[in-house]
Image (cartoon, rainbow, N blue to C red; front, side, top):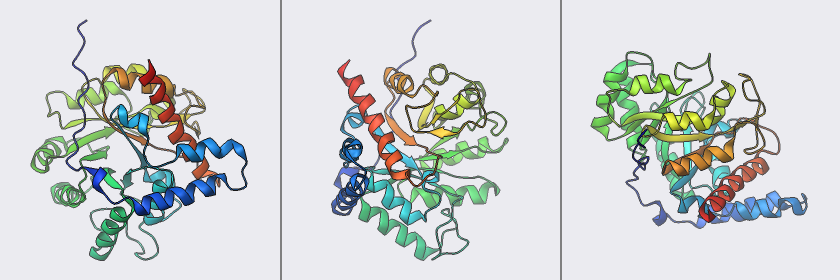
Length: 315
């Protein structure tokens, strides 16, 4: 069977290297010190790995990000600072999470008050972060969908991650063209998502614009008993963005999330397959297991990906 062309890169319209780094570098230094303080030599390498940027991943064209759900017990602005503190430059907002006590009852979505919107833009600029993707909900027809696209376009966002309702794709395809953005269908596990299988995603994408594709989530595939590597191969040419997570037990729909590389989602081979496919774009850490050691775990997650990238570059 003939090979398909290499996976297209997700194009970025902004050169984020020009963003001032002082605030982010300060947060990395203080974050690395916090990781290492009182925890012994086992964290020395982790603190070092959390320095700004992931050089090996960057060489492969991978932009490492984190899903806001990872930091769901914190306010949006606290979550941004924690992402910067482990050396990340990209952040994926979850639009159904609360802004925080300053804006009670308000979520991080297109209904954000104007003062919160201005503060949000100022914070991400100060931290040297970008918001290239957002996980959003479509629930109000054309009007709500247009407001959503327009709002996030104003933040330089390129990808809307979602699990849209059936019957909405003609509308969403037109909006993707109008706003020059992309729609990535996310797969929660079987029983919780219409899009749990790559075969279903391909059916939805058939005969549609290349602006509609997959937000491939390897951990959720593993929960559903699917092979993440085989799922990626099926989706070649339609992968827009990638969510990276690991789970303790493959085939268990309720399996607990674990540090990347320590579970049964075959994360190392999944990253290897992304490289083989020529994927260049976001790799968003979607870490669900919230404990007091969250930042330590996140540093380990980041370090794992960059180490795998280093090994792949050496092959």
